[in-house]
Image (cartoon, rainbow, N blue to C red):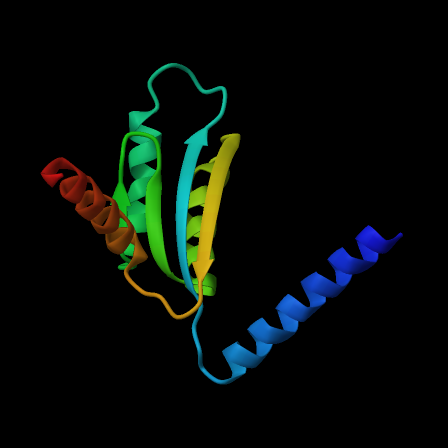
Length: 130
């Protein structure tokens, strides 16, 4: 089927490019939004979520926490290692753990966690001046 062949070709081409960039020391900046929480463990989960957030903050990767997600930014492997460690803080205690993750991978960009919101703020500020 043409669609699957195209998808396979696209994926493999993407992987080849990533491998070439990685061998040349070019790190892919990754910004993720992640929510890691116990699943089916009662009404108040702040203590367990705090344990997860502590692992993320101790990673020293740029991060910020909001009421529903924590954003983490850095090279793909480092970010995903932090997600893994934070997830297993709960899972290793035998707690069923739910992970919701969204990733933005932008080669050649850094500090996107801050630049994205600054860009929106600037647009909104310009619109109020008009």
